[in-house]
Structures are given as C-alpha cells and as structure tokens.
Length: 140
Image (cartoon, rainbow, N blue to C red; front, side):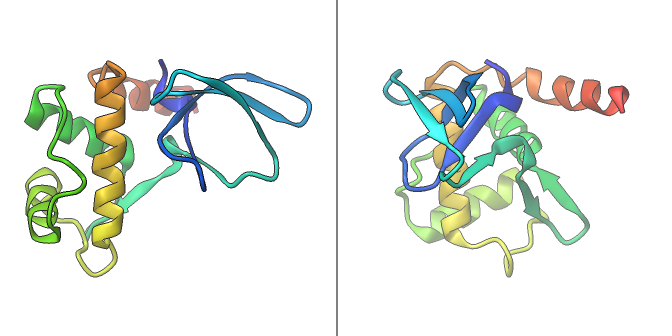
C-alpha cells in the first residue's frame, strides 16, 4: 500500500486506497471494510500526501506527522480520536511540538489521529513514508 494512493472522501467514513482509474473517476478499496467502490468526479476527494499541518515555522506534510506518531507508538495505534480535546491537543503537542494551535483545530487533530489509527489497523508500513518523500524529491 503506497501513501500516495491513499485518499479521504468527503461524506464517506474512513480512508480509501486507489486501485485503478476509470473514464469517470477511480475504483477504490475501503481500508475499514475492505470493500471496493467507484468514486466519481463529483465526490470531494483529498490525497493524504497533499495535506500539511500548520506550524509556526513551515507547513509539515501529513506523512511526517504520521511518521512522528508511528515513531512514538512503535507503529501501533495511537490514542483514540474520541478522547477529550485537552488530551488530544496534549498528545499532538508531543508529536508535533511547534504546531500552530491557532490554525490547527481540535477537529483537525481528531481527523489526523483517526486516519493514523485506520492506517495502523490496515498494517500500513510507516517506515516507508520518509523514503517516499525523498524519492519524489529526487525525481523532480
């Protein structure tokens, strides 16, 4: 499973892996239910590799945040995204100490932790995240 093929679809729970492309969209597999389904151009789709988290210095790619969480948790699941706002923000401050708390809301932190846990349950290899970033930089 490649990080560059993982998407979030607005209005649909969980994360999806892009399997193939069709004339009108893509075929994806849900990481939660292991079901395949078509996603058309009318769906609002976000590639996880295009998402970044605001910090006071620069925007940090979501892949780096996931790598930080994986290093802290040993690749296992993190705390639940249903924890209190205080616990979530304290945990996120440990993972990404200089995140911009005025622009990164608790709902964003919940989503990041929820996505991380979905990937962890799907046995995603977080050690590949930084290597993928390096190879894409070298190709440019």
